[in-house]
Image (tube, rainbow, N blue to C red; front, side):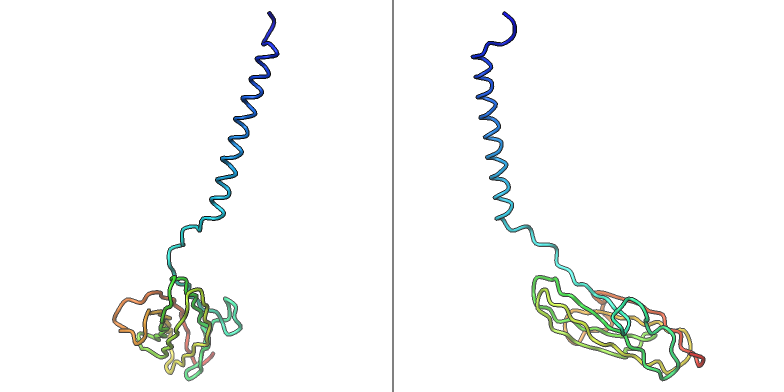
Length: 156
């Protein structure tokens, strides 16, 4: 006898059809489950950034004259899965020059002007610190930190 009989071939085709149908049902059930089940929440985090006065990541106030006010835009996005209170502190050579407290709902973004005015010449370190809560203890470690070097000279 040459090969497999027609009856055996028909039985094999029927079995393969049932296996394929079962595989498709399991795959469809998996897709439905994944689409209807909420995913795991991302770890909580806070975005903290600065931009120049035009809103771009350029034109930072890095060259100023004594008494000239530097302006930049600070931004916070709350992704902590809860309402948060943040305090932004600008420190110029370890001296607090500006503080701003912001209350935010989860998922909310805040942007606001931050200003500082150096009075003396020299290369100054501007630290933009983010604390959680109002009235932070500036001796505590900030939640987030950004830095900018500012050259203050008479020729600017």
